[in-house]
Image (cartoon, helix red, strand yellow):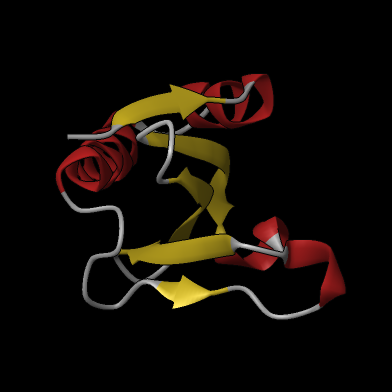
Length: 86
């Protein structure tokens, strides 16, 4: 089982979500502790996104994260609405 770690930026962004969306995103993030590479997770493209992945939560929210298999950590880098997260 992996440990989920939030960046300050991700935690701050999530604190602004409506309660329903917050719970959906949090549930998806908690699932990453069990399986950091779930079906539907995609590697980010571009030179600035080495080893970063994203998952889709519902239609409009995305979570960007990095996996450290050696330390068994999942670092949540950003979470937010799809229009503003990329």
